Structures are given as structure tokens and as C-alpha cells.
Image (cartoon, rainbow, N blue to C red; front, side, top):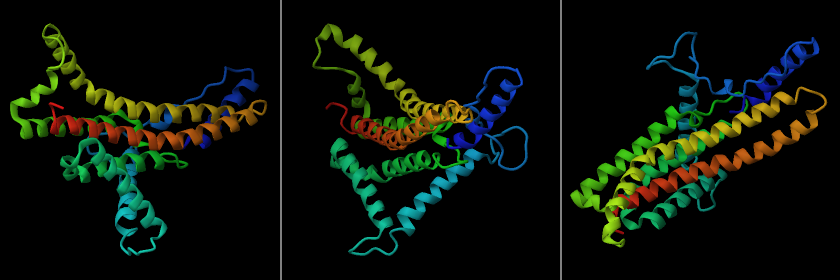
Length: 265
């Protein structure tokens, strides 16, 4: 999350002050930025509590509406900047779905497009100062991954019936190895939502935590120039990671959808 520069510097200054007084060693709190807090008041976070995570997910949704609806409301032959970005995103995801799943998968394009836009906007908005990154939380990414897993599994049985189980039977392997491979494929299938969610949340969390650590050291004069250079480099890397992780999550969704539509391929 991008509170790292402001909060990290504050923590660094406080820690440096303690060190100057002959106190303890430097102490940074890079994980504080991921704390889910009530948006109004204080206290425990319940099931229906409006939190900072809720706020930034709503902001991401409003930003998507602003780009895809309002930004394209005045379509023209010579597109505006917002129309160009919207059309680029649409074409990018449409081509991805068509290439991976084939023509049969295009009817599920709206769902995949929604996933991609939500993740990419949540990732990029989390890079703003004082922002919060919902996709750095497993509670968010697990819900996204489970939604994909359940949708694909149900769709596989609806489309193919019991023959969907053929996905786990490697008919090209020697007969003696097929039961073992079937067990491995079955385990791999049920691990999908775990790896799908951890990959996204872990990458987003790690990058923001590293930036926060460098921001804390920036308050110390001796290492301040190095810290600022490191923050700049990490921030540039995080911009790239924010897009790549949205792309990876989306293309894996397309691969899983292809398995549901064509389990014998």
C-alpha cells in the first residue's frame, strides 16, 4: 500500500529519535499498512462493518464505472484518452479469452473482464498515497479465487456431465500410471484456488512491505539517498507487478475455463 512513504518516514524518525537517546534499535512496522480498520469510529471489525478495505473496493468499482461507462459515453471515430484506454482494455481481455478458451468461451467474457478490471484497478489504486490495497488481503483474493473455482467446476459438470471427470484421467499415459496421475491431477485441481489466491495477495503484500521498509530508512540521513533510490526503483517495479498480477490471475481463469469447456483436450 502506498502509505509507506509517509508512515514509514514517521516510524523511521521516531525510531531514530529513540536510537539517538541511547535507546533501542530501529523498529519499522511494514505490516501496519495492511490492517483492516473500521472506517467510522473504533472497535472490532464485524461481518457488516464498513472498513478501509470496503472503501477502496468501492473506489475501484467507481473508477471502473467511470472508465468503461462514463469514459465511453461519447464515443467518437477519433477516440478520447478515456475511450482509448477502455477500448484497449476491452480488446486485450477479449483476445486473451478467445485465444485461450476458443469461441466457446467468449460468452463468459463479461465475467472475466470484470475480474481483470477489478484486480487491476485495486492494484493500481493501492499505489496512491494513503491508499489501501484490498488485493493484498487473502480474504479478498480467496473469495475471487473460490468464485472462479466454483464457477468453472459447476460449469464443467453442467456442460459435460460425468465426462468432466475425464479431465483427471490421462488417457495418453501408460495404463499402470493412470490411477497415480489421476490422483495427482485431482489434488492439483483442488489446490487451484489456494495457489490462485496466494499468488496475487503475496506479490502485492511483499512489494508494499519492502517499500515501507525503505521508506523507514529514508529518515536516516546517512542512508537517505540510497533509500530514496530504492523506493523509486521498487515503486516502478510495483507498477509493473500491479498489471502483471492482474494479467496472471485473468489468464489462469481462462485456462481453468478451457478445462471446463473442453476437459478431454
